[in-house]
Amino acid sequence: MVFSSTIFLFLFLPLVLFGYYVCLRGRTLRNLFLLAVSLFFYAWGEPWFVFVMIFSIFGNWAFGLLIDKYHERRPLAKSYLVAALAFNISIIFIFKYLMFTLRTINACTGWDLDVPAIALPIGISFFTFQALSYVIDVYRRDPEKGGAPVQKNPFDVALYIAFFPQLIAGPIVRYSTIAEQILHRRESLDDFSAGVCRFIVGLAKKAVIANSIAILADQIFGTPTEELTVSTAWLGGLAYTFQIYFDFSGYSDMAIGLGRMFGFHFLENFNYPYISRSISEFWRRWHISLGTWFRDYVYFPLGGSRVSSAARLIFNLFVVWLLTGVWHGANWTFILWGLYFFVFISIEKMIGYERRSNGLIGSSLKWLATFVLVLCGWVLFRSENLSQAMGFFRTMLGLAGQPLYDEYTAFYLSENAVLLAAAALCSLPLAKWFAGRWEEKLWYQILYVPAMLVLLLLGITFVVVSTYNPFIYFNF
Image (cartoon, rainbow, N blue to C red; front, side, top):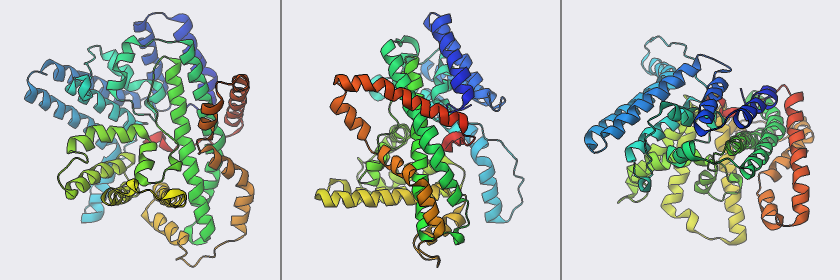
């Protein structure tokens, strides 16, 4: 089940809200209810996957208790932490990376190892990282060090990991940021209304823009690269660049909005990444929850940027970006995509790229260079394999002998010009600027509600009439 579906919008969400606010009172009952509906939500498509998640939940709950029990005996507590890390990594490896590893071994050695067909549990990367956050934060314990107290009730741990708004595709919620809210949050009308509006914005981004522009991206990436012109290849890269942003940020907006409806405050996951003027800035604005997870649990423990040598800094960055690529999927395209950004971020760190001020023209050129590099990264990310990626890049660079432009390019542009323009405008912080400047004005407050209703109507209309509703991060 996804948020942008009729079953969720017209049945699941209304029933959950009714049950939560009308039928139940008390934090314990409401938490148990949210846990039950979250497990149902996850089990909707493939029921057996829920047992994998339940196994993960109770395993991490047990490790949390052991780590907390022996917190005064740090070597023993650390040994339980290492066991918890191995437990979680083993789960994600078996389901997500075992087949890829065996195929790679067979390809490199000529062996003929059996490769089992293992179905990938939905959202396994997201709920595993949340489980890892739980045991690490319990080990750290001290809030000043990013820690949090243990949850002795297994159902509270289960709610943290399985809560349906962020279960499938994040944002990845760190345990230390939400531990207090599980037991002591306060629902309010202001939070609920803000959550509804945030959900509406996300639904419009996902259903109206992302789903529409996905058709163009799929048409172009589904065409053999030797049949594309240079401009069509670039157009395909641009379409996917907008698709993945509105798809993922729209889903994150809906998740954050849903959390607010139930009194939870999740941290932001996107901050207009396409206005960035460096690759480093882009990754501070894109998928913020994943970036901060790797920063706090991998990069900083390795020493971060406060190291004695450039070689050590580059090593730390390499580990983070290799893991970032691996986290996204068991495919060489994802691994090279992570290393692609490692190279550019390392260069920026070495030359102090972000500290250089170049005026209006220089800043504009830095934005353009960043956007082009990010677009090329998305081409690699979108490609089915390295062969398609290389073919796409050859075409984009004019090295494959294809013409610059043809009638198909003209057709794609004429059919999608308004959509592309809307996507470009909506990727800029125009609405944020407008709200910051005028939200105290009476006319703005009067127009705000009708505007939200229009967005809701558009979003629902596209959900109802469209049969095409892909979600890029669904299996990550």
